[in-house]
Image 1 (cartoon, rainbow over the protein chains, first blue to last red):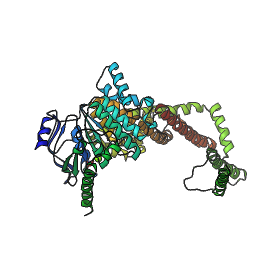
Image 2: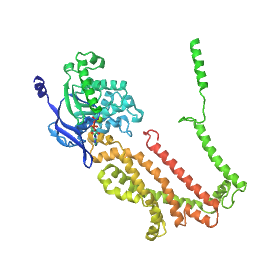
Image 3: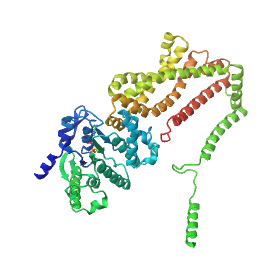
Image 4: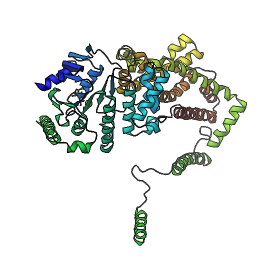
Length: 272
Length: 280
Ligand SMILES: Nc1ncnc2c1ncn2[C@@H]1O[C@H](COP(=O)(O)OP(=O)(O)O)[C@@H](O)[C@H]1O
Ligand SMILES: [Mg+2]
C-alpha cells in the first residue's frame, strides 16, 4: 500500500495499458508475441525489461518507440497516444547501427541535422556527448575502425545528442565481450545519473539488470507477459556506481537468487 | 639468461619441424606466388597453343598461332580503322547501360524499400527477366530498323531487368535498424530515404553495375553480329567473310580485355568513393 502511494506521487512518463501484439505469420497463422502488458514508466527512472530470449522484449520496446503498432491496447507518452516514431523517444539497437558512411562526429550530429538544429548548438552538443562517451580521440574515424563497444557508444551519443525525453535501449551491450560490457554498464550508469534521463532498457543478462535497474520488469514467454515487477529496495533509492560495491550490498544475493530461480523456471518451460 | 636462450632454440626447432606442404587447407600463400602461379597458367596455355601450330598439329588457316593473332592487332589498328569499331562498341555499351541504370537504380531502390512498389512492379519485372533479350531481335529490327536504336534497345533489354532485381535485393538486405534509427531520431520518410537508404545503397549499386556490365558485353556481340556495319562484332563478321581467323580472335581478345578493364575500373572506383567500407 505504501509503495503504491509513493509511485502515484511520481510522474508517469510512459504508460502501457493492456497492450498485446500478434504477428501475422502466414495467412491463417498468428503468433501472440506480447499478451496484455500493462506498465507505467516514471520520470527519471531506469526500468529494465528482463526475460529469456523470445519473450517479446524487443517487440515491447519497438511498440514504445512507435516502430510497431500494438494489436490491442494503448500506449501513451506524456498522456498522448503513441502513433509513430518520434525524436522524443530515442532508441539504441542491439545491432550496430552507427552509419558506416559517416564519421563518429557526423554520426552523433546526424539527428541534430535531421531536426535542423542551428550549427553552433549542434557543434556544442556533439562535442559534449562525444566527450561523455569518451570518443574524443576517434571523432574523425569511420565506424569500421571502431570496436563493438565504441560503435555502441557512438549509437548512445547519437541518441543522447538528440535530447530525447526517454531512452529505449534494446540489449545495447548484448554483442560485446564480458569485460567491455562491464565497462559500458558503468559508463552508462554514470551518464544516467548525471543527465537524469529516463530509461527503458532491455536485457536477458541478470547481473546487468540488477546493476542498472531502479525497477525490473520480469517477462515470461509463450506468450510474452509480465510475470513480476521487482523494485530494487536493497539499493535504498540510490544508484550504486561500481559492480564490486553492488555485490557487497546487503540484499543483493537474495534478489539475484530469486531472479535466477525465475529464469530457470522459464527455461524448463521450454524443455517440457 | 641461459634458460631464455634454451627455450628460444627449442622454439626454432619446432618451427623447422613444421612441414611445409604444397597443398594446405585454407592456408594463404605469399603474393609473389599468386602472381607466379597465375602467369604460369597463361604461359602454359600460350605455349601449348603455339607448339600445336608449330608442329602443324592443326590447320594453320583455322587456328593461327598466338603471335599471328598479336600481329593482326597492328594491322587492324593501322590499316583497318579498328579504333572506330572499338569506339562504336564502347559508345553502345556506355549509352545503353547509362539508360538502363537511370531506370533501374531508382526503381530498384523503391521496390526494395516499399512493399507496395514491389508488389506492383515485381510480377512484370520478373516475367520480363525470363524472356531472353535476343528473342526480341526480330521485333526490334521491324520496329526500329537496323540502326543504332535497335542495338541500344537490345542492350538495354538485356540488362535492365536483372539490374532492377539486383538493386531491389540489395535494398531489401539493408539492415532494418538503420532505417529505424533514423526514424527514432525524428527523420521523416523523405529524409530517411535520402540520408539513410540512398547512401547505404551506393556501394551496392556500384557492385550491381559491375556485375551487369559484364553481361552487357555479351549482348553487344549479339547485336553487332546480327546487323551492324561498325563495332567489334561487325569487324569479326567481316573477318569471317575473308577467313581472317586471326582478326576474329583479336576481336574476342579485345572484348575480353575491355571487360576486364571496366571491371578493374569499377572496383577501383568503389574503393575510391567508399573508403569507409571494409575491403570487399
Ligand atoms: N516481425 C516479426 N514477425 C513475426 N514474428 C516476430 C516478429 N518479431 C518478433 N517475432 C516473434 O515474436 C516473439 C518475440 O520476439 P522478440 O520481441 O524479438 O523477443 P525478445 O526480444 O525477447 O527476444 C518471438 O517468438 C519472435 O519470433
Ligand atoms: Mg530482442
